[in-house]
Image (cartoon, rainbow, N blue to C red; front, side, top):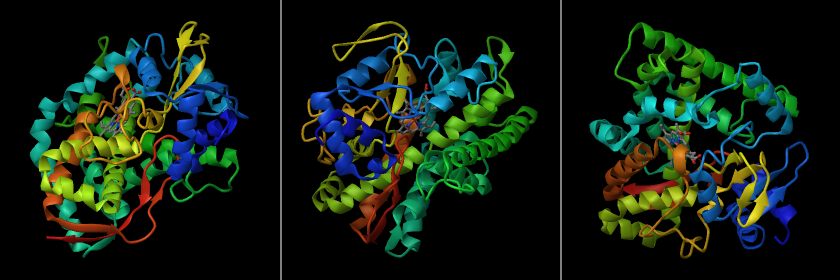
Amino acid sequence: MTNTADCVATVVDPKAHAEPARLYDAYAWLRRNEPLARAELPGFDPFHVVTRHADILEISRDNTLFPYGSYPSTLAPHLAVENGRAARAAGRPLLYTLVQMDEPDHMKYRALTQGWFMPQNLRRLEARVRELARDAVARMEELGGQCDFVNEVALHYPLRVIMEILGVPREDEPRMLQLTQELFGATDPDLRRRSEDETPEARQRAMQATLADFFNYFNQLTEARRAKPQDDVASVIANASIDGNQISAFDAVSYYLIIATAGHDTTSSSTAGALWALAERPAELAKVKANPELIPGLVDESIRWTTPVRHFMRSVSQDTEVAGRPVKKDDWFMLCYPSGNRDETVFDDPLEFRVDRSPNRHLAFGYGAHLCLGQHLAKMEMRILWEELLPRLRSVELAGAAQLSEANFVNGPKKLPIRYELA
Ligand code: HEM
């Protein structure tokens, strides 16, 4: 790839996110030649594509200078930007989650559940997470040496962990999984909700129907936890107060929604992406099997390698500079985490998967005030799964074509056929 327009078109194209070679080529060209590329795409407000590790950090670090502002936190067409602004101006935002909030609201809402996701509290959950990881390995055993690791194993383990923490009963997990896949897979022909036809309007209606299903489900959960609180995150949120007032049912539902979606798909993707990488690299598998103290490094490398969250957007509250170039108040920026995580000025051999990579200053959890709330949980889940699986995994290889989803926001393997032998 040799020009800005083609590279920009590639990094926003959902299909390119299923073709790593093409995608990483475009990011590399932009990092080298146009680290603050201007995107002017039909139907979208113009925005800057930020591809270098240092610039993504600089923007993420200061959420007063670089807030969401009046823009959505993920790339959306002009019409959706305008609808969102109109809805907020009328006091009826479409959704109000931590990744729609600037300060002071953001820190107040984040503080409500932060304690639940900190290492001290997670230690109390570790034994239960280990039981669930053992169930996942037992499932692999039942499957008899061949499976689609994504759909039969990886999607279910983090789902069960986060739903137990949130307080969603087991029988509703398939529904939560389906709705999450519809939301994050809205541009993938295999994952999105069926719409009457393929027009953008019909797709938009399908997406709204998915959100409405989440809202209906979680409204009932709010009522149940207000009536009878339990030891779960849903009860903390439903009964929380901000500035002395109980939070609205709408805010509670929005909060559930981000935890119920961000809290599993991303972790499944990193887990499956790591097994895919290990199946293709027997020497790396042998290294981590022989040196279990490398498991935390394997986890970090899995998250860098897969970078399941492909971007978040930011705006800017005053004229300033980014990447040594002037930017104007209210400009819009796409933070390309997978590009930062392949930046050759930060990582040696960034296109290699190395279980012993150190240091590994990846940006896959973001940075600054919005740094992933669930990062410790995600890392704990993956560490425990590898601690349970690796000592028993004699061999693993691909048993067919693996596939990534066609999605430019949350992305990961949607199919991973493997053949394996367990001790
Ligand atoms: C490998 C797994 C995961 C990845 C790669 C990931 C990635 C991210 C990223 C990139 C952000 C935005 C950071 C920023 O804007 O600076 C984020 C925010 C967030 N994540 Fe995660 N995440 C993962 C797992 C989880 C889990 C398990 C939870 C469960 C609670 C979770 C909950 C959240 C929440 C609530 C936010 C919003 C935080 C805020 O705005 O203050 N994530 N995550």
